[in-house]
Figure: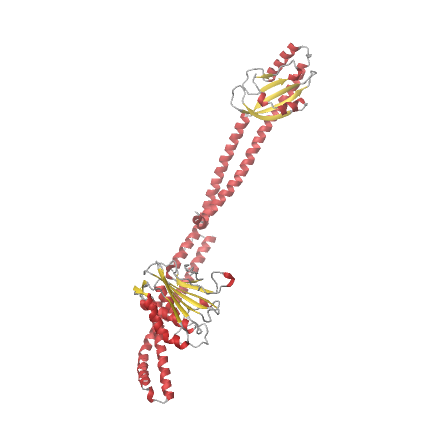
Length: 548
């Protein structure tokens, strides 16, 4: 539901419209219903007050004809007065109850018409207020003569007489009709409000659909364009703002298609040029190599200066051949012709072969190489030639930049992946250099002489080899703390990596602020769709979080 809420603009607009309109309509409905109830109650009170006033005057005139000593005639007069005020019918069914109470006189009995027990409906507070000479009212709920409980408006007023203790006149008016009217009004208001809210929601959905539909079409068209379908366009209809958006989008897509095609053509020509030049240089290089080999074999018979020139020529020809080989390999990657020959391989002997091959260089520079390899075989479905080339590049760079300090190689595995880390303690990487370390022909210090005579394409080719395996090639570095590279490959060819058996940030790294990740840190590997992905690298066992 949260994902649907985040993705659907139409759902958010309709929901917000429904909630807001429901609150507003509900508030107005409450005010209207309350106002109607107040008006109905006010009308009932006005009617009762008028009847109470006229009834009080009539009762006062009738009772003024008798003295308190004429008990029998007085009681009959009170009974007749109550019946008259009640409408003349003791059994009247209007529900209005009229009563006279003069119990403090000691000779007059309370009389109500119709003759029912109204004690629960006339409270002590109301009687006390009336006895004090006030006209008072209350709303009480109760049942009379076995009838269901009903809400009554109870009014009381003193009757001016010469009798001791005073005479009180009460009207009990049922509010059944007013309550029914109020309920009908509330139901009507609620039904109208619900219909209005639904209408507003439908209107919001329609309006939002008119706006969102072109945006969704633009999003789908953009997705197709990003997938490589450069001929996709939006349909332009009308002359409004949405039509202008569609026209502008189509113009942008046309310009992008033109630029992409131009760049693709330039890239194709560049790759073709690199491949052609590399192949064309093979023939003269072979001839030069044959001549140089003859001169190098006879260098002992030459003068020392000529012999030294022959040795330099031989070394530079070796480096030139390596450069041509790397250029051809890069051109195969660029053209998409690189093929992975994966087979079950024990990586422990692969690491030993790389170390043995670079042992002479490490001894000459004075950099010891330390190994942390498991005793058991580490089997993975990889291309051994490409993995050995990656390790040769990583270990060679570590030895060259090790500053005479040990280089440590570690190998680890879990159920889904294998990983190799190469750690040096040289100058390290400055902030920002981790983004450039895999670029072609990039060097951290251009003035630094190469000890191994590399071509500047080693890490670029290593990155492509890792991507071809579906693996990660990640780098960490910090100034004066050295650097560490981690190669993570799936144990089975074609599997998707989620974690790495070895941590990228070394355990001996000094991190600022005590944070778990710091320094120059870069993770490079295959992103969605196989595209190159570069981003901050994870710590121990974490998956590389990458961005395209």
